[in-house]
Image (cartoon, rainbow, N blue to C red):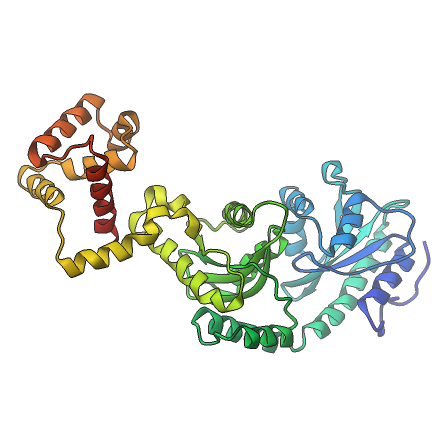
Amino acid sequence: MKEYQTDPFKGTFGSLENLADKISDVLSCPVTIEDQNHRLLAYSTHEDGTDPARVATIIGRRVPEKVVNSLWKDGVIPRLQESDDPVRVSSIQKVGLGDRVAVSIRKNSEVLGYIWVLEVEKKLTTDDMHLLKLAAVSAKSQLLQMQIGTKKKEENRQELFWKMLTGNLPQEERILEKLHELNILPVLPATVFILQLEEEITPALEKDILYLAAVNQKINVLLSAADSNQMLLLASPVGKEQPLELAKSFVESFFTHMKERFSVSEIKAAYGSLVTSFSQVEKSYKEASSVLAVQEKLGGETLSLTGYHELGIYQFLDTIYEKQQRQGYQNEMLRTLQEYDRLHKTELYHTLETYLTMDENLNKSSEVLHIHMNTLLYRLKRIGEITNIDLKSPHQKIMIYLDFKINRLF
């Protein structure tokens, strides 16, 4: 090992690339430097030894999602987030990760990024580990310099996003100009995601949410904003799958990782239809909001409906309801059931709603209602006798089903 009487990383290096080369020269190992969301910032040059994970990181300019997931499962990233000491990472062959050492770049308790040192031809010694900590201190000043002006830029981005969400910037050309000014690549199609938590979204929670969105490689977040207990994202699906499938996949992985990594559950999520122009962002936002409204009022089976395209008939219930209100419409059969239940302390209204919601499946309906199938058959017979509902008529069944849902929603 080379001997250093003083800190070899003191001074100005001009760029993170120069610093990465210096760390590599001092430690005689390949080096990469990432931001807190595992996006590649710099890597050392002129090395012979490497591994597939490092190659993929350099080519994709970010750590592959499967590598990040493995590092979470093995407890590596939690340890890096809790301490400024270097962490030795054993090889994870299934994701192409060789032996390496990592250290977090920190400002007090805030993680700004990471330095990764690949142990190809040598293992880092105790002295090397000390030098790596010194390198992280030098990298901190570089990353802090990169952050100068970031807060103001973020405020400008949020202001633009809110104008788009509320329809206060309807001109496509003007939106594209603003995106260009903020160095945002205008990728389309895109959709608006609403991620709703039970609690208020603090700056720490916002950072966790944006971290998961950044490391997930199924969407590319263009703009974001926190609003009370909701996180709003304008994102473009990325990948070979169908865009709406990618959006659904992101939501599912978001639920899982928020619970596993940050102990946050009880989350609702929704996204609107894909838009092909930024002037349509308000439309996508309203659609996502309507999905959340259905989830909150109906619960149950609707919680799995996260995309506006999945709502089916729920997309049009407000229009039907408005017409019913104008005409003074009432479903007399359902009103009769409600009155019968009130007088006789029965549950025929709820029984019929469950039966139709379960697509007339007797087994599922009896399970949900926690009654014997014979009891269900008896109740259905009584419903027919009391209301003259013909459950063999598709026209009657469809209208009754819609009225059940409208009653719940409105």
